[in-house]
Image (cartoon, rainbow, N blue to C red; front, top):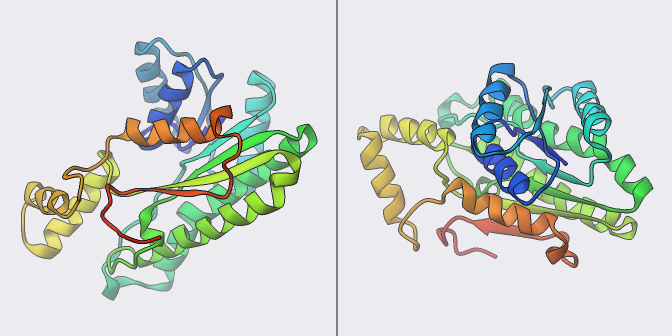
Length: 252
């Protein structure tokens, strides 16, 4: 299996979860130092993984990462897309570059990864793809419009490929995490705190007060849902987009 963006955050949690179930895991990231750190972290948990450096916004890098994974581990039967994160921009700074950054950092890396593994899955008539997307695609945040647009596009692609690929035995699903205890959340809280003129701790407290569950998610909770969706226990689940925002957005 291949996990894009597997060197930190939700991708790293997925690597740990899948390795814990005995999967042969390859993780990909743009930065070698992040891959080295992730490998050490997983080794301390007793897991050995394959690492491959790749920028999935570049199609040839995505193809190379898939080829390396299959050469070292065998056919890719599971793809977890977790690479890239769109930056947050205040509305008055949304330039053309900001819009392109949202698509190039989140949308196209997922598209290129799917393109890289899809032919093999079709040939074998088996596969599971899980796209970790984000609730920003269902609710227009003034601080996350470019990234939210990428997320919305990825939700459409997820259900679209699920419809197309079902006849080949390939399932495609998505997860929409809300705020999760990762480095990315700290970056978002820092920006929110600057805009509101409060501390980061106060920004987190206000955020959690808006959540019906009263807390933000842990990365391993998102990884557990990804593990389910990729497993045979979800053998009749495809085209699903599962929200994981603690009930914050009461939307369908």
